[in-house]
Length: 170
Image (cartoon, rainbow, N blue to C red; front, side, top):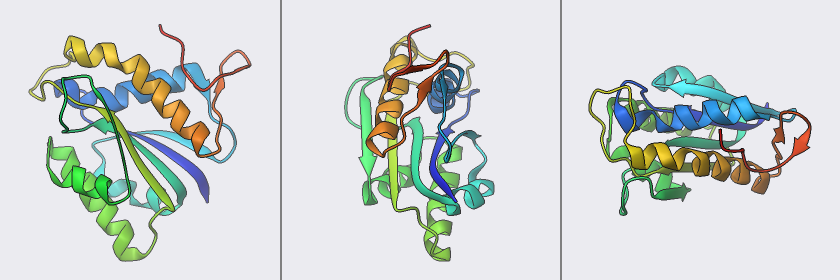
């Protein structure tokens, strides 16, 4: 059983849709996960992630999230709000996220806690570059994910031995 799964989601080829994967990559470069914590690039894998979700007690999903506010604005959702947010499809991978959560629910293996942490995207079209507003939000998004992990009882350790809940800017 994994105590905490931190799952970066999104498509790096679709502009701001890749923000979850980019933030997770940055977090993984700067921090080590304690025992029982799995940080994983889920990209656009959808239902193939079901065994990881079934094995997790707590889950933090990191993604672009359709919400009110300017691009790059922070968003945090929990409980039923997570399932509702991924039903309103921003990109093709979010159908997979909704199916993933439904699959876990049908099989009776829903994690005790699921949190969706992300930012409001500006653009989702084909592009390998994120918009400036969303790119600028990545350091804060990583810090919010680390803080969420700490809130759930899993303190990430900065590479180099410093205990800190937030990643340094590159």
